[in-house]
Length: 634
Image (cartoon, rainbow, N blue to C red):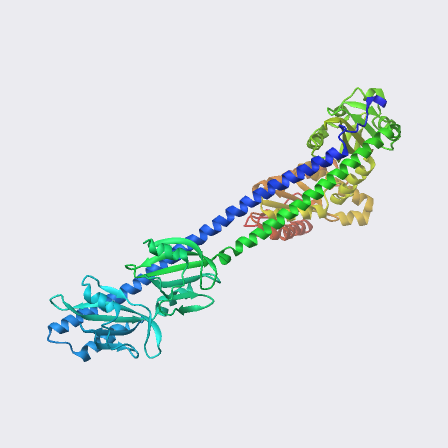
């Protein structure tokens, strides 16, 4: 091939081998993603379960503490009643009316207790307060009575669940032993509690849709349970529908344990925390339903699996796309080999300047259009580096783009750039750059195409100049001045001073001597201002005979010095130009904050007209000015 440049076809890898590699790669990547996903889901589930276990532990602890507090409160009241009974006994006997009244007062402060009753040593009920209908009149044969009678050291005993009261509701008895002064058994003090009172506070706890909290006694009989679906439910006496794990926990003597089990009553799997209350006579069992606390986990999994599935589809698409591109590239390589002469014919006869470079920028080959554009012969260009024909200020503007293209981050790029011809003229070019790589993917050659856009760039610069400059004087125009003045609102350059200048006598010159002379006067005024002010001080023609200067970071004192310099330049010009002297009316104003900025234009304008009026009246010379200092200075 010409110049030893070839379009190579690749490493000979067959289509079947490539397909096998793609399939293997896709499978490995997706298996890896699936493994990571499974690990993530599994770890997430463990975290959800640990969180649920911790929640049940906290809820069971709080519940046990609450119930223990209620029981202690009731027990304390019963102790007070027992003490009252002993006092009345010491005073000579129990006054039934007085004792009933005392019990009634105590019961008023204990809403949890339905009835308070007192039996004698034979088990016969002697005193009662509250709804005692349906309750036995003799309790001598009941287990809690026998236990308290026969065991002096036992202080408080819970009964089994039984029905009582006028409504026949389920209740639990709290029984306390009463002693005579000599310590012998004197009877039993009973407090009747409905389980609903013990569980009603838990209705405010968020246990989820299927969570539950149960209260039971030490023989595993269920006293009551609460769930959002059922509310508070009391169980028939002797119901022992509990899971095997709860049985194992109670039988092992543990007073606190967290476990997972399926409830035999409703068949719902929950994470439970079992905790004993008081001396172990009762226990509370708090459970959060697995399907409740894993609902968010299932939702997250659905999203994760959707992403994994989309990733799988994307990997298939990318593989197909890669294979299709590979096939296309192979066809392109073949086409390149088959059309080598056509390629060079196109290169040589392109309507824009074309160059072939090494990756280091050394020129290898150029076409005729490039020779004509740059003004060098082909053999002269082929001994140069592209930097040697690039405008010095533009050396680095595409360095990063060029480097990223060589490194494979981009295939090509396009940028406006200036070049220097053999005659020293500057040429604006639209530079399009692409890279040709070898079989290993390393950059071999760089193709550069340069379209001459000097004419359009010149027109663009001219249009830009016309949009921001006054056509007659070359000073900035009103639109540009207004834009810069608005930018001062950002407050980065205070104090800001505005000088407004009116060219006196322009109308008379136009009327008496013609507009051509008037234009010469305007040009003379602009020349005086150019001399007085520096390039970084914005001087603009804002009207026919009006000019304005915008001075950021300029206070009143500095503005006064600039006005004096303008007067000096004006006087110097007028000494040399007697026939067409320049006369100015000047007003200045300074703002020290954004709030003042909107006011200074009018105040400077007013003070310019004030000086103009003085000039017309003859009260002030043509080179004088007014300077007033206040918050907004002019």
